[in-house]
Amino acid sequence: MCLLLGPTAVGKTLLLKRLQKLNVRNETPESGEVPPTLPTVGTNLTDLTLKKGKVTIRELGGCMGPIWPSYYTDCPSVIFMVDSANISQVSSSCIQLLSILSAEPLRGASVLVIFNKIDLPCPMTLMEMKSLFRMDDIIASATQPITILEASARTGQGLHKVLNWLDSTLKE
View 1 (cartoon, rainbow, N blue to C red):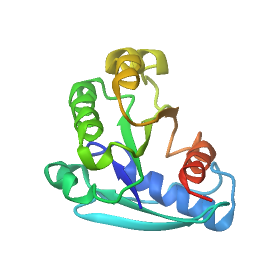
View 2 (tube, rainbow, N blue to C red):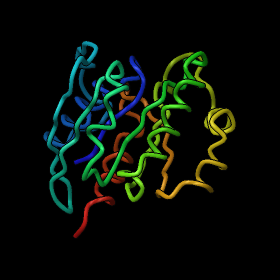
View 3 (cartoon, rainbow, N blue to C red):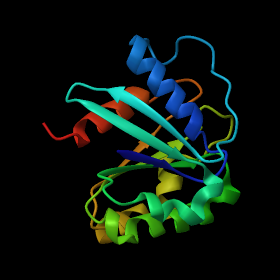
């Protein structure tokens, strides 16, 4: 089980739909129309079949942040999404990420931080995001292996890297 977490409106549901389409139909991430989404209230479950096996991704709505910890048990991997075009959300996103990284049940989980929405007109650069989050300090002090990617769930840019990361977290 992989948890997909992040604040409200960062693109988690769209990422899930695009990964599923990419995985099932093996299409290029950029192909087709952008699927419609609604804010997630509750959870969404999606199964993906990768090279090393099957993984279930559980998306938890951003509004469910207070109860995310009840889903941490037996979770080997976490994807945390951030909206790289929403500067007003950076500090709260950072606090949420630190809370996830400090949770005892996730001490050994692999963590992927996705800076999403790089297709928008004025996103912050990866360097700006890493600086605002102080990612070097977070990575140095975290017990988990942390990977950072830029992506656009809307255009599909970077989604193959997300699938590769998910595959790398599976045990042979």
